[in-house]
Image 1 (cartoon, rainbow, N blue to C red):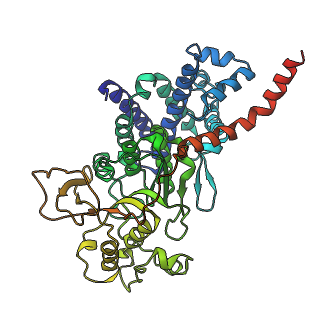
Image 2 (cartoon, rainbow, N blue to C red; image 1 turned 60 degrees about the vertical axis):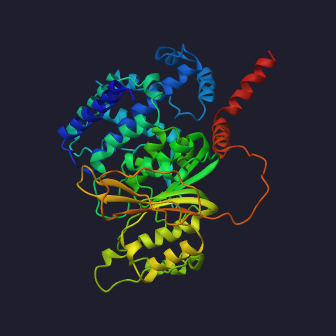
Length: 487
């Protein structure tokens, strides 16, 4: 990783935060929206210019601004789905030249709003009710900055900071480790230890990387589905996708938190996985599962305790409840409803969602290992009876907020149903296991002949996206070509 570029981008993040703190948003909910969406605008703007120059090195800002509408349409076709489409009047440099307008903040908002509309087909996240959540908020500054006298000031400060730094080929070629570190740095103030609340857990990049390494091992999978039913900001998924190869995976996720779903979308874009954005669902995984597909790999650090008494009875009435929640649904306690073991539902859902030969890594509380009765024991018995436990227990110990996890690895095999890579034991291993991560692998049920290799799911998905986008300009081009032929 190039330290110079890392510092450059982190300084941009810090300077943006300083602007929002000066505007009275330090620590407020609106701060993370302004920061992440401003940064996303910067990334998409520079990525578009980078892709345009990759098509033709002479495609500078000035040339793009002076292009005919027809030539620009052809350029968009060449860029395809590699990044969001933008128009010359939406570029940061164009807005930078307009910053002295009396209502510049409205110009800024309208620009981001139009970019979101133009790219709605590929870059929108959907709720479990199929409502689209767009790239940018429609009134980002107006709804965030309550003092109308400060809106222009904030918008001008943002555009000046974004115009000052240039993301070029060197940054875009940095790869996963660079962008994962950057993402972690950017959201560190918005993913504090949530004490077990739904969608509040954040798994550090370093821990997620080890989980991905152990899960994949020496395998070389391709054309696979990877899934997290409580994805949060997606660190586990991003590390697993990077370990397998972003061109060999399709990401699926669901999370009840809109904030987490938006952060996951940003994470996907930074790491070249925009072809999977349409698989991000914001909603309740347990009672409104929107991914019935069986998955090749599942990673999850689900919430442990949560009051779900209001919808607990709905779980038992779901059509697939007896198969999906085979060990049962936790009862509503008379007291301390906030300590209901929702993780028991998630681990059963994960087992249900695996392909016959799928694999999973799940972070669970210590009580799951020690329980001698109830749902926990039934799940453990199911895992043993079906020979699904594979590998080691990974201990994740929660400590201070700035370092929420420490990692120790217990080498003892639980069951030898698959070959796992050997991992050395750290010298400072904790004596007691905390937050064990179980590695699950479904056994081969039957011997099937090898099938002919199919096109990558990612390739097919991107092809469909390109076809969808071409519909917007195809008619005009056919007309143009026809007129040329008849001249």
